[in-house]
Image (cartoon, rainbow, N blue to C red; front, side, top):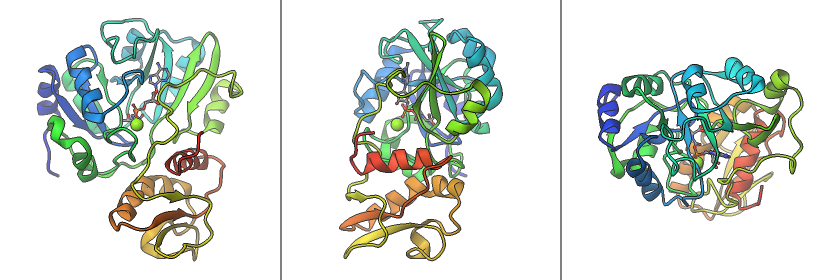
Length: 306
Ligand code: TXA
Ligand code: MG
């Protein structure tokens, strides 16, 4: 592997510089959560609107509860899914350790304990909370390999940690636990069914809290994306799913496996885009389980409002 050690990355964070951070979901562009100047650099590098708050990454559940106020259900979710790809939005407890700009001025804060050992090594060496949005420029597909991450925002970092390809490939599931109501703000690799098994039925949409970051056009490559496609039109690349659909090298999963499709999704969207096709067509993906997150990202890449 190339790239810097977690210790060098932690030093860069301490001096207010940005760090390329591998996680199990996607690569993140990280900064010291308590340093407003450092956090401002993230918004500049990504071209991200300042009303869109960031996720604070911490080492363990205890650290999370020193930043956020967890009720019993938030704690049950943390115990069930951390370390791992679940983000919990809860009332903020410590407004200094995750500064106002990182929270976009909200009274809530998003926290997660990443599953990737190198992400946790950086956080441990740093010793504080690290905010990290996906390392793409705003509106583009999230990077899931070190090279893709460096191509997106590598020019802005003081250190970069290579964690290999991201095993999960789609961003964490975001749930809010506020005023006794648990709502799904962003589907992700921890599925709705898995969450409901721990905390019971989730709030209906509309009853739920809003996530400021759910812009309609998001995760989009340059080429137009067409979803639920059975075949490719002239000049399109077809990202297939399941046996016998399209060219093998462009298949999200030849066997129709949703985990494999999630892991390949953003990488193949980017690779297809590099061939400068007329468009990118994507086979239908089942909506159950992890399919909810995959279809969410594809609908947004195709320009539909979620
Ligand atoms: O897997 C992930 O979550 C990756 C890796 C790097 O950890 N990070 C990531 O961050 O996807 P980002 O910034 O691309 O997405 C964070 C999402 C946004 O939709 C944002 O609006 C939402 O979380 N969010 C953050 N704080 C929130 C809050 N207080 N209330 C509601 N939504 C919040
Ligand atoms: Mg993002």
